[in-house]
Length: 128
Image 1 (cartoon, rainbow, N blue to C red):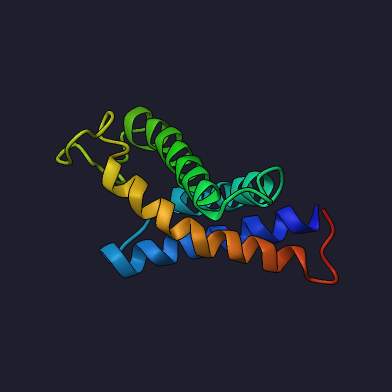
Image 2 (cartoon, rainbow, N blue to C red):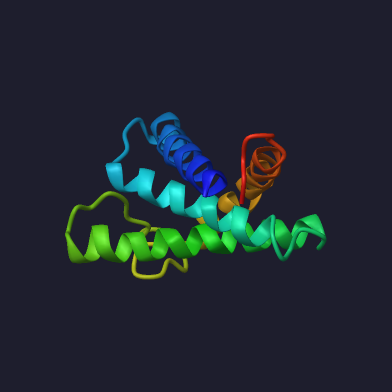
């Protein structure tokens, strides 16, 4: 429980911070998406896939984050009409919520996320 709580907290801080650096603004829903994403990476990429090739773990992490972003976008942008982000102008976007360029970025950023999950797992006070 402590591990997931710590990962969720870290993801909920880092994801919106990255958005603030990149776009200059963010939305509270990005904290939720970041927390869920880092927990998913910790659960899958640093769990059952732990001994798999790093490239596979990064592709899986990028896919997980893209999935979280897609479902968050369906709720926040499409259902609630908050217009937090819109990839409609990007080639091959899906409903304006995800696009290949963002997925590639998430795949690359999965590398430090996987490292962070591993570091958290090694903390003496953290339990699964």
